[in-house]
Amino acid sequence: MRISLTVNGELREADVRGGESLLTFLRDTLELPGSKNACEQGECGSCSVLVDGELVCACLVHAGQVDGHEVVTVEGLARDGKLHPVQQAFVDAGAVQCGFCTPGLIVAVADLLEREASPGDDEIREALAGNVCRCTGYVKIFDAVRLAADQR
Ligand code: FES
Ligand code: FES
Image 1 (cartoon, rainbow, N blue to C red):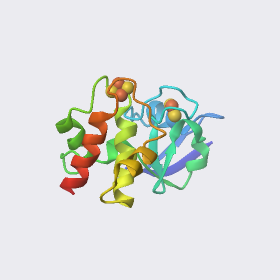
Image 2 (cartoon, rainbow, N blue to C red):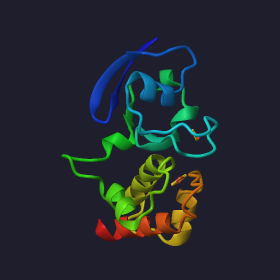
Image 3 (cartoon, protein in one colour):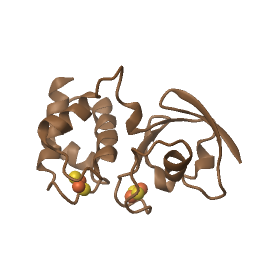
């Protein structure tokens, strides 16, 4: 099946293999490896992307379902060679260790801050409940969210 979609503001057209996930399609066919594959079961959030502005796990979406839709991945957040404020906040707060969870968290935090400019801890916790980090203990991730919110 051939599909066309907008990815990070660019119109893309490519073939999809039967049953292929959006995550595999993004990584292997469109060569956008930012979204990570840690569980492929919707459990970890490392593959989080936006489809028509909705946060989804790309591993749970069939690539064929995004035909005609708009997808934003972590690669699409930076502008004019400058990191997105959430990306910069993760760096500045030291919220990245192995980095495997980071792209999904950054997409999820960017989505949260679009909806709620100044989230409290409970809102942060709820928004990031689907994103698993095995390294940081989350303290610095919360610091990064607060820093990004302060800088917006
Ligand atoms: S790889 Fe998609 S939720 Fe874990
Ligand atoms: S930094 Fe390693 S899983 Fe989050």
